[in-house]
Image (cartoon, rainbow, N blue to C red; front, side, top):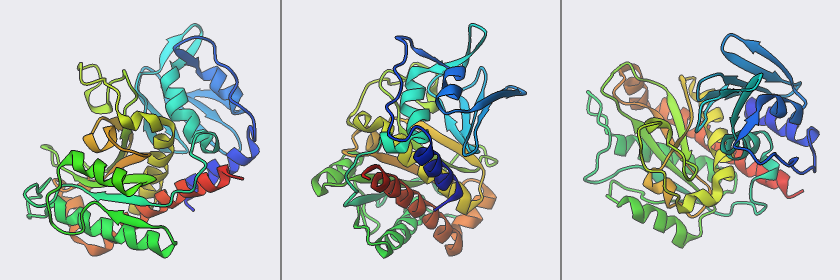
Length: 320
């Protein structure tokens, strides 16, 4: 188990064990002072950050920003942290569907152990996805990674299916339908990034945006704010996404672009807790070279599989 996952698990056993979340005031804001008290944390400021810390965990929130870090892993909020009275506060949606599920996974995950994990290698067939300068095709790289994740999970007696096992095209909506018809308990879509700027680099994990909120990449631009099927699992999505991102950062050693929010079709229509992982930028020379290397694809696969296994561990602990 990755150190971040272990730290969070220890805190959940010791901290607030068996207790319900105290009632919040009827407000859209949750003060950072309240959060610090809830988790028995001391609070201080460091530059633009409010830092809350106890023996097991550290939460850092950047003021006038949507960025936060939990045990060093970046988590993007739906709304910026803003001044509230004499202190600082985040929106209730970011506390209830982001911070608290990550801090107290046992209180937010389903109690049934996942029986089937559906892995979704992005793109395929006529849809190549991102293509690197050296003609590395996203559709092929992520299929290789997905097959490796499948092997790692099956070695731990986890049942796994792929939405595609060859270079074939599957429409986006059909991918969610495949997961639904199979009765999947977890859905993880695997991708590689591309950007106009070749300096863009790092790994990131997306989960479904909360209803009524902006997605991470179009904040304040008036994008889609509609709910979707995937919103039924908002809290569990955060647990899964954070577990994958933290473990992927640990194994890949790439820069942390954070746990983010998006209304990608496969997340919006997911029939179970889901996440979408971006394993690096094919348009970045260093990460293009890494993606060509089978050893790196194996490293990425181990990070993703460790993240999924970490989530399953949280579910099993929640049942006890």
